[in-house]
Amino acid sequence: MRSPAERGESVGSRALASIAGTLTESWGELRTHKLRVILSLIGIAVAVAALTAVVGLGELQKQAMLENNERWGGRIATLRIETVSETGSPIDWNALDEQFERVNERYGFTHATRLIDGAVQLPVQLDDGVHQIPSRQFDPAYPTIHRTALKQGRWFRPDDVSLLAPPIVVTEPLWERIGSPPLSAHPLLEMTGNVVGSYQIVGVTPKAGEWDTELRVDMLYESYLQRVGEVPTEVSVSREVWIQGSKAAEIGPVLAMDLRAGLPTGTVISVFRSDAGANPGFEQGFLMMQLITGAISSIVLLLGGLSLVNIQLVAMRQRIREIGVRRSFGASGSRIFSSVMMESVVATAVAGVLGIALAVAIVRSPLVMDTLFMGMQDVPPFPLVAALIGLGAAVLTGALAGLVPAIVATRVRVIDAIRY
Image 1 (spheres, rainbow, N blue to C red):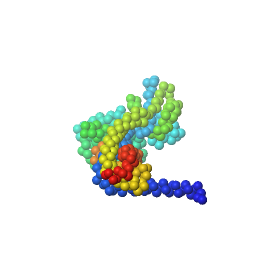
Image 2 (image 1 turned 180 degrees about the horizontal axis):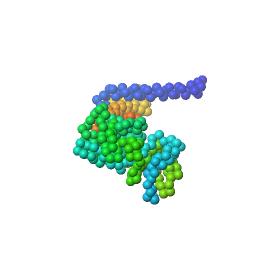
Image 3 (image 1 turned 90 degrees about the vertical axis):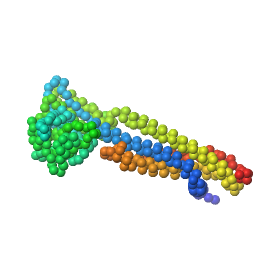
């Protein structure tokens, strides 16, 4: 007498053999009726490709939107620190710098920057005279926090402060204005006034579009201080720190209190998130867009499934003799049902795989990447969830499309083989 374990293994082996036999039989039927299968599954493959491509493009679009927002507000999560004086007295920015260094020893921020954003006009010597050019002053961490791209050249390094000719980064329109000199020739830009001296151009930021004519100079905050001695009283200095998003809500209020400690009465310090992650509408808007496009693709997939049902029903009338003969040789109704059902599932699964391959080829094509996502810094891999959704939708469609033909097949009797 066999033990329960042996009986369990025997039942499992029979179940696996039955499934393998059904799959083999279904694949054989598909190979026999190649033309019918191809015609019935074109719509399924196209619909799966559309559904998968929508999810894949959605991930790329989300990354593109995120990077665009990070160029303005900083990476997730960026805390912006603003300082004002309620009494109207000038703020001692050097004292605030020292206070921040003491606080930073406790928090250990790896990416922090001071920022003067456009408040300083620099007297730049051009070929037609001296022009007041808008500028920004910040620390080396700023381009990393804001994903600021360069057309060519490099951004600032901490050791740039010691260079005799302080490095600067200019916009493309300003670079073109001075003749687009190659950066390998170490071109210099001359300035006058309280920042008089020669400045080496080490990088060029690209235009935002053909309409972009902005002239701007970016320079290190410390290099600016070396020239002017101290920040002008009419200029405000902001700070930004990039931290982990989960800690932003905890750190913000405490950081404001720590920075305020020891400063003169009336100094108000505000700490708030400037990145897109602080706005819940960013994720909700993207999700809504993906749901709408996904619903459209699902409708296309449903229409493809309905056409498959019609073709399967027509094909079933042509197979009545075959099924009747199989019943005469002892094939059970459940075996006939599973065989017909699996034909549809296997066929749509194959169509799903082809549709996924087509979607990957479309999403990763140079035409799509260069046209829609040019300039993306961190291109995400093709999302596995998109492939799983596409394959799952194909298999589900096959199961639903094969249900009615499978029920019809189980009602075929042996006598029907003689009639047809």
